[in-house]
Amino acid sequence: MSNSDFKQLQAKALFIKKKYGQKQDAKGLPAWTASDYMAGFVADVGELSEFIMAKKGIRSIENVDEKIEHELCDCLYSVFSIADELDVDLQTAFDKNMALLAERIEQKGR
Image (cartoon, rainbow, N blue to C red; front, side):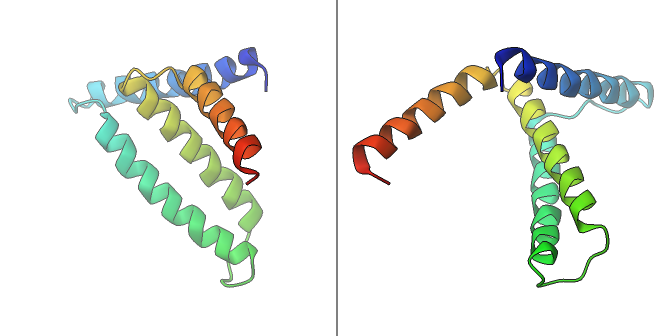
């Protein structure tokens, strides 16, 4: 994925985050914080887990591929939102972490 592709995904997520914040404000409710996004993320990961179990034949859920896609996108949205709330440059951090993992693989052969 190119840097511009990543930035476009991030911009889409943060646009939606801003719209949700405006909706909360209009209702007189506080905007979500990193803790709120984290709680939502955990719930989405739980649902994703169930759908993956269904994909593997352990559970029976209709439209499982569509539901997996949806939950993965919800999780990605949460990650972008949490990073924004905590002022994490996710692209730089991701590139740095992937370089570190690549180095570890080369050094340890794992």
